[in-house]
Length: 288
Image: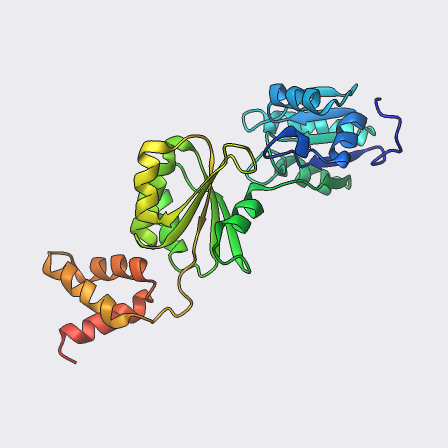
């Protein structure tokens, strides 16, 4: 086993290692020690892991195995047995913290159930980094990760999120980004503020701010790489702007939409409670 420094952890420990989301020089001394002293390193991408080792000058005798979405189920059992036999197993994903929309949770859950110690080497996270630089409210937020790939389930989830008052943080792949933003603009409102964050902390970092409709148009031409998306929550006063919302409902009904459909769309756009808007629209049309 490599590393003459004092042991970071004892035998039979699962270590979740936060890796740099930018340049390898951001690797902490604690991360370098964990990699050097591991018996097994379960890496989301073994090539990227070896690149990280080379760039940080870390030498390790650890056995390096791949551990990604496609083989996570079959690899968890053998890794658990190695932990039970006293091995120090380090899980390292491509960037950021394992288990946060990346491999790791399955092994953590299994290790916890087996009474095996689980610890972490704290590291950067695209979630909190994007939130911090977004300029949107960050005192309360929720993390949604990747929404469903299929359009129908994704739209249904966004319809639920239309009522979310906390700032939302999500991930999306480049080939789905424009479609996601189009659905988000429909569900949350075209004017809802959002921020797209790419290549955070790297020299070519990109942070694009604007309403969802503008971000959708930008993504249709410029989407590259996995993106962290930060979206403002619904305004805290859910009944504010009721009169304006009623005008929008009337316009949609005059254009041929049914009352319930028009109310649903306007409620998502404005943040006015659907039930409140429906009752007000019904009363208005009945002359009450």
